[in-house]
Image 1 (cartoon, rainbow, N blue to C red):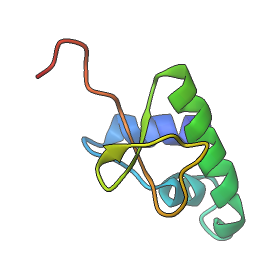
Image 2 (image 1 turned 90 degrees about the vertical axis):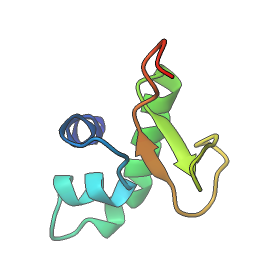
Image 3 (image 1 turned 135 degrees about the horizontal axis):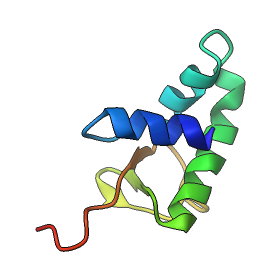
Image 4 (image 1 turned 30 degrees about the vertical axis):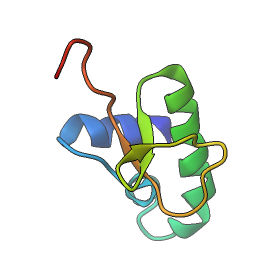
Length: 79
C-alpha cells in the first residue's frame, strides 16, 4: 500500500485520497482496503515522506476522523 501511495504521488502534482491507493491495489474490491490505506499513509507521515491533510491543514493521521488527503511535504527551503 505504501508503494501505491508513493507511486501515485510521484505521478501527480497535488494530493491523493486514500481510496486512490486502495483502487490501485485492488480496483474491483478496494473498499475493504481503506483502513489499510489510511494506516499506510500514517506510517509514511511518521517517516516524513508525506503529510496527511484535512481541509488543507496538516493533521495527525492517528487521531483524525473523516475524509483525508495525502500529499508530499513542501520541499525544504521552498516558499
